Amino acid sequence: MITTSSVRVSHATQVLTGTVSLPASKSEANRALILRALSGQEFPIHNLSDANDTQLLNRLLSTPAGAEVSAEDAGTVMRFLTAYYAIKNQKVTLTGTARMCQRPIGVLVDALRKLGAQIEYLGQEGFPPLQIKGFEYAGSNQLTVRADISSQYISALLMIAPLLPVGLKLTLEGKIGSEPYIRMTLAQMAHFGVQASFEGNTITVPAHQYEPKVYTVESDWSAASYWYSAVALAKEADLLLPALRADSLQGDSVLPRLMAPFGVHTQFVAEGVRLTKQELQEPLERIDFSACPDLAQTVAALAAGLQVEVEMTGLESLRIKETDRVLALQQELPNVGATLQETEEGVFTVFSGKEAKNDPSIHTYEDHRMAMAFAPLALRQQIEIEEPSVVKKSYPRFWEALAAVGFEIEPIS
Ligand SMILES: O=C(O)C1=C[C@@H](OP(=O)(O)O)[C@@H](O)[C@H](O)C1
Ligand SMILES: C=C(OP(=O)(O)O)C(=O)O
Image (cartoon, rainbow, N blue to C red; front, side, top):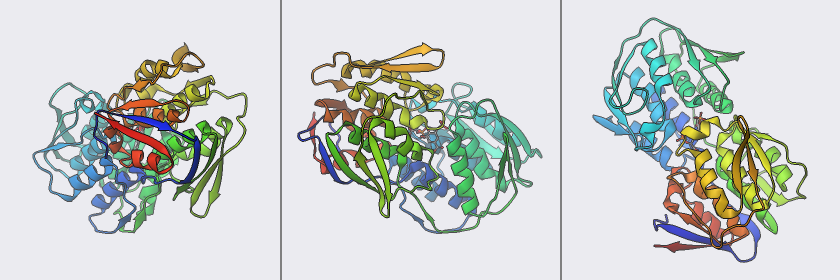
């Protein structure tokens, strides 16, 4: 783990070959951990992510909850534990980093209150920290929730729904953002014996006991995106990304299709995926990130590196993630010769090919994806990334993995 204030990243040959070490998906791992805890049984979860988000949730679930619990900067931990502690009738104060206390949670708290949870806000209404005081079933088995802010509220409610006396009928209102994450939740619930139905905008979950069953977490497709970007920016590349599957539960497994126009060829092999270079395809279409918001920064930085123009939509949820990611991109892209401008309502265009700074330094705003999205640009010019330890949220061995395929990583104090 690099803990210096920044790292200087470069690559002498721009040729990438070898096997990349990928973390396991923190999304899948954190669902598996919550579902195991809700099952009340012990069973192995293989390939548990070493991401801080997952290690943190694992610790919090395997020790009795103290009076105050911190979800740190992990959205899934904050949202999933709010529902978990409520249904388990555990009295805790749930807090997080300063940024976490600016990330809304009102939709989830309102829904849990309707089900019978007693939850109070200790600071600003609608935001952590929360005091969870107990649960007394209110008799309702139908809820309507907004689906256009964060899918994590919906996943949190779905996972506890089978423990309610008669299950739950959840109606989703508005545009459904991050939908593949909702489907991932339902697929993992089905793995543990709970079959929900998702028809139109209504999800029906029966009351049912989760059944113990070994679970193996897939590698993280969001983390794979930085390698797709690296391949697109390299002169030559042949990389193996282990333990990724074509039949993934992760929405970010759209990468083979998304990255083909940027010159990356994906081949599914027995061990995972093999990435090689192919011709850049023109023209690049407008890309909608509402189903895969975690890929937006990767694509914006890559467009800057390739000096192409890209139109991006579906960025609404980026404003309430680890940082305001739209603003962070707008502030940092000019360092590498690009801008991000809202060209129509809801449409953001990366304009590139402007003059990049010499030895640019990228501020990362306590956001792992800012660090990882910009790092592959080192294949085109030396780049400094500030606060490199931020990657520990999802990909603690990111810098080591870059070094293993020829990137020079120089820690700077
Ligand atoms: O459920 C999950 O595991 C996640 C859902 C997404 O968040 P939103 O639903 O808030 O968009 C995604 O950005 C996040 O990294 C992980
Ligand atoms: C948005 C993210 O995480 P979370 O919302 O779980 O903090 C992310 O990992 O990009």
